Image (cartoon, rainbow, N blue to C red; front, side, top):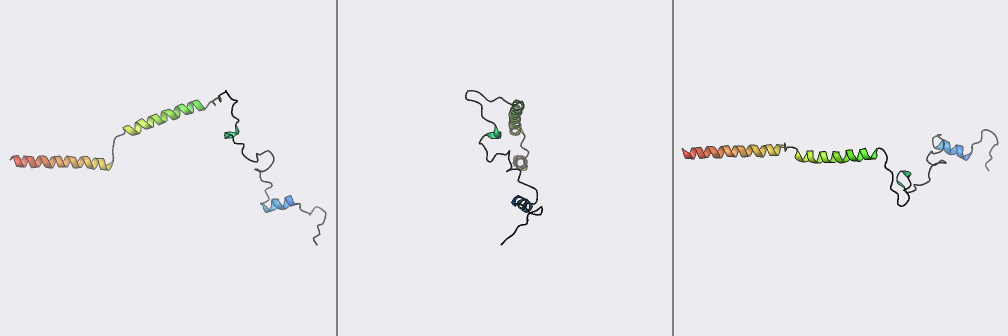
Length: 111
């Protein structure tokens, strides 16, 4: 048989649970005032009534314009950059040397 003394030294189940969780109290994500589960709306915003469009925030237009021009500038700039790879340089150098050799062979044959 298990006896509990009545007084200030008794612990309730909540106090025992707090101690086993590290003594920090209840979990803030499950306390009153928080949703039990998501309601299905992005950023918890209700959609506008049918027939009405959503009002844009102040930051949206500058962000969309900047994003568009960034994509255009990068697309044009990266496609127009010169080809500076080692393989391209070596190919051009090999072609120059082949031309010089063929020119030397032709000049020797002409003499």
